[in-house]
Image 1 (cartoon, one colour):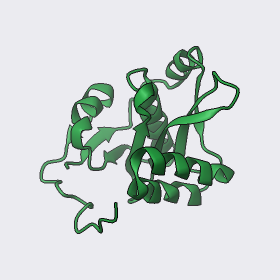
Image 2: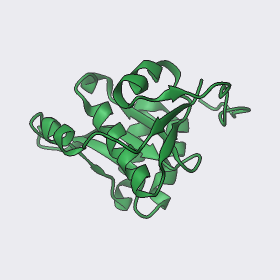
Image 3: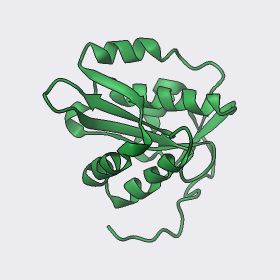
Length: 163
């Protein structure tokens, strides 16, 4: 899985994306430290233990380097997506995921753009999207990311497999 490079210099504004989702009863916001267990349980359930392990590092940072998407339409608010950064490596975006039933609504894009704004706030001019897999076209279209040649397998080599 190749890595991709994205410029943080001219990111699109986040507020219009958030407003569009608010009209669909979806809120995107930075996760709070005390939500670690709930976010981890969501990630583990929908995307696996390895992604949950990787994203849990975001909760050791101040501020937390993870955003969550919350469906507020029902009586009980529930997490439907997440994006984390500065987890496995500095200046890396990922992991990220949106529940299957909520895809193709702009949630993944908003989580990505929010996270990239977070990386820019940390002082980075460019960011690496690690191990993009099948999402290469998405990242290229949404934020103009470019494949980093010879980046496979990148940091994701010699992995322990427990799932």
